Length: 165
Image (cartoon, rainbow, N blue to C red):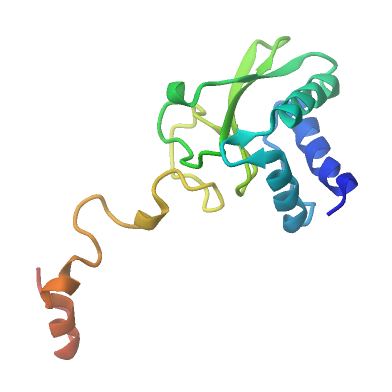
């Protein structure tokens, strides 16, 4: 990907954030967004020069009204994105006196609002993993594989029916 293609990702995200909107990068090829974010982020977060430039883009796009301020991940209420590359930023609109917590990084979606006052439902399916991905879909109690070691599942399959708990 070229620098121009990377800049298109950053500029689109900055323009949306300047309007206090979660960036919608769906009109760009997914590979373009992925490559751009991988260039901007290292293992432990964004490159400092990129972050400073991105903050400037948001500020300029909003005519000085909206700023991005870094947030210590230890102060972010759960659930948090577990990627060490995740960067938490507070998006602040000085005119409306509104704030929004943003997480950004080399994952999908690359920019996502978190900690909203939305009172219901689960996160959308395309959100970044908020918990250990190896436990996705499992209840917090008994593992879906717990009966395998004891032979309970294999025996019930051999009989052609599920065993009663």
